[in-house]
Length: 382
Image 1 (cartoon, rainbow, N blue to C red):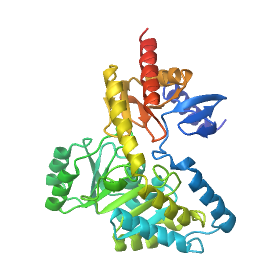
Image 2 (cartoon, rainbow, N blue to C red):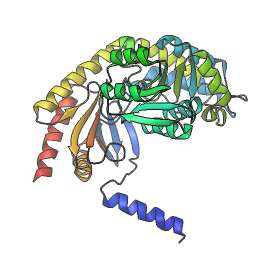
Image 3 (cartoon, rainbow, N blue to C red):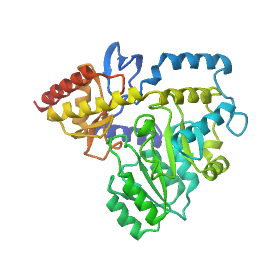
Image 4 (cartoon, rainbow, N blue to C red):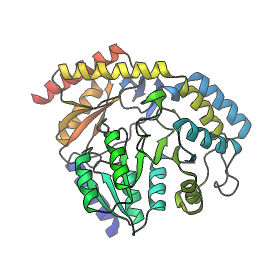
């Protein structure tokens, strides 16, 4: 065996021994808030399909018709023959809806963050980013070769201290953090931007479609550039960057993650337009999701659990990585599917059970989650 394979096996062994092993869970069916895994139906609290649109029958019928019309794939990159008229219309419709000058669709949220940051900034720039920014944001920062500093999570007083000592080109943060389920104070961030004249980039992946007025997110008052995803509240796949026209044009000319990859399917733009229309009409779903979030926080906190999160993503604090994994396994045995978020997804020793609520859940589901968490916790203390 080569030295490379020996090293890979050693790294995997160390990861498993630390209680940090990962596995793929092959689902065979999905029915609302339920999934089927290994022949068992589980109540799913791990999905980002916040508005339940990924399984929407009307949208599925539209998609089937589009596939019959356009076929399966684009067959080319965006700069060759991979751009359809509906893609351009969808990009502008997203920009108009969320309040930006222009938009650009890419293949995934990870690729959008990576391409945006790696393309806009260089080694001449200094960037400040939240310590818990998404891995894709950090990947973009490292690819850009810009100087960077992290500020304590959502601690804008610490951000101010860094701004006072580092001339800064941009500040990077999220509107709703994917693991913690919390948000920065955007009014304070806006005030800092006006004072220190930096570019503000906000990842709205977990807020767009769900939070803010009409589901338009939380960060518009502070953001110059935003990143959104179509794989969460929109129930699809792909992502988009919202920005001034000059930024869009620069990404088209210099963004390697945009230029050198096959386009999304030719029907993708049509489905985005249909989904955007549906998201606009989903205020009842957003209201239901807010109510579920309030109920879940109250029920879980009253049962003695340490709960973080301000919206539809809740963090049940565990701490130890291996205990978190065992709790998730016990929950699965009780018919509940919850993601055990461990290092390096979260800081070492800060493992959580990440609870994602969707509008497919109801009050009875919250009670089942509460009871299962309580029982699993007692079993793990024995």
